[in-house]
Amino acid sequence: MVVHILLFQFKEPHKQANMIQAKQMLENLLGAVPTLRSIDVGLNFSKEERAMDMSIITTFENRAGLEAYAVHPEHVKVVDFIKEVVEYTKVVDYEKE
Image 1 (cartoon, rainbow, N blue to C red):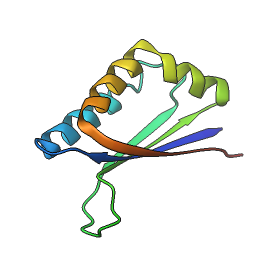
Image 2: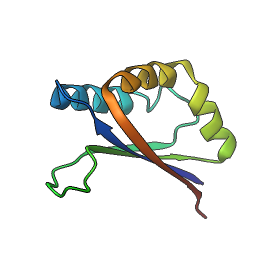
Image 3: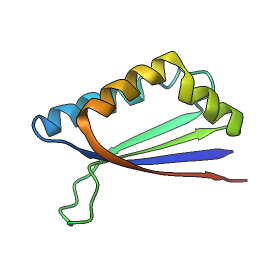
């Protein structure tokens, strides 16, 4: 199994509305992208300076599944929206038995 984790820092203005829209768009990918096995989207409540605004944890059967997800048209639509409303992201990908 491959685990793909992303952390997002959103831009102002409309930060909260954009976070909610991105969360819904990401959750809608389950079932729309065949290689996506699970997705968990979390909106941050921590007030720590180092905190990020949103996280996603997705799983795939293998690296090929993650690669197919990256270029799937439904995922690309979400990425295009997120690129407009996010300052930066961080990623971690790893294999898990």
